[in-house]
Amino acid sequence: MSLDTPRYLAELFSNIRGRSIAWDAHVRAGLISESDVKKIKAIDKVSKEKQAGVVEKDVDGYASLVLGPQGALKKATDGKRVDVVAYILVLLGDLLEGVPAFTGSLLALPSPFSHLLSLLSHTDEYTPLLSSSVLSTLLTASLRTSAKPAPDAKAALPRLYCFLAGLTKSSDVHLQDIAIQSYVSLLRSSYARTTFWSLEKETVAPIVKILETAGGQNGNSSDRGSTLGGSTGGAQGSVGLQLLYHVLLVIWELTFEEVVAEEINLWVSSSTASMGYTHCRQNSSSLKEKVTRLSLATLSNLATKSPSANLPPLLLSNILPFLQTLSTRFTSSSDPDLTTDLQTLIDSLESFQSSQTTLSSYRLEILSGHLRWSPPHRNEGFWKKHSREILEDTELVKALARVLSTSQDKTVLAVAANDVGVLVREVSGSRKKWEELGVKGKVMELMGDSDAEVRYEALRAVQGFLANAFSG
Image (cartoon, rainbow, N blue to C red; front, side):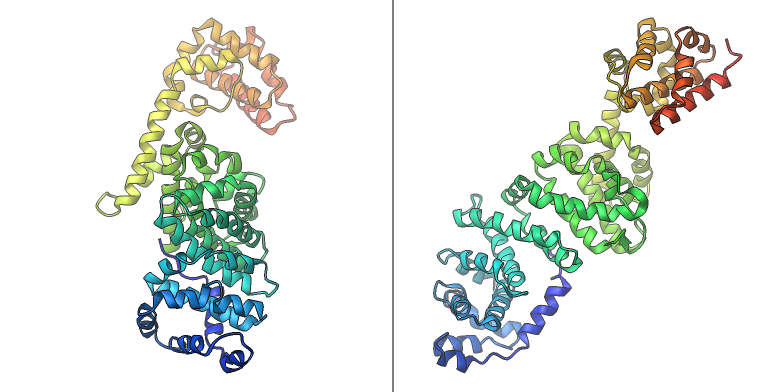
């Protein structure tokens, strides 16, 4: 996965490359040697190809020159030459990108991250950004080249994460995107992902805030699940679609870790469902199609890595019919990745639905008294198949009536009212049984409840009683 350099950084890099450095004056001041200046001038303001060719002939020498313990970056920092510090940091980034062998030579230096980390707290406006860019590239390479991270890389990663987390909290979307794209690069390794998640209050919370902002201007700011959904325009709330895409890339990468898949709903609630449902409709542009694909891939990860945590909210969101409709628009030959993710999701949800919409699972829930919006309550097929059987189960009917009459839990009351309303409508002649148990009077009373959902479900139940007023 390769992303373009954030435009803000790209313009900064270009500006710094175009500046002239008074190297002779720095030599006279003892900040750099003539031989080092000669090596720098050999690769300054030349084509990328020539620059790479020169460095490849002395890759270790150039690594030591720019980032060694007594290299140009350290000397320029000590000499308070911010212009040279900026130039060397941009040069480092260019060589990391253009000369593959250069990365290994830098990592072979003693404590290659130490000085770069110190620059994250530099008082200059741009030095910390430039240093974090180099650190992100260098740490990404270090973590990917070894199954067991080096001690200095393990120590450096949390410090870089904390710096980037500060950028994500900024009101400047350019700084936010720089941080998010750095995360995308770093999170390619399992160690980086688990470390990121272990710092969740620092790292995850600001990302959730961006998602909340994305959904907040659509009237859904109070519902975290909706924050991963959005409008069809080029911006999501006040968050640009490009930034939102990068945030979703971060979430997608994180969901390759089982611990994240298990715990992600602690942060974003039912967003695992809302994200897929809403974004799958945003496919009128190439970027929106990418968001759709990314959402499906993320949902597929969550459904397979931790089905017990993620399939219930997905099923309750009623996403399954939408996914089934979406699947008719693609074929495995035209879009194999998307169709694979779609089919994984559909199969997982259908299997889970079958296991959860059994009469035995419904009976256990009612008898327990702990009613929640589990799959059977909203499943039309379940009611058509089992309504008469439920009404013939005296213990079950009395338990439902008892829950409705005694519970103080608003969700329990709403679910129970829903079930009574469905049973009255599905089974003609059941009205009298419910009246004898005092259920009709209770649902009429609940029409004045303080909770909007309870009032709504009670109203629907009463409408069911009225529609069957003469059915016995």
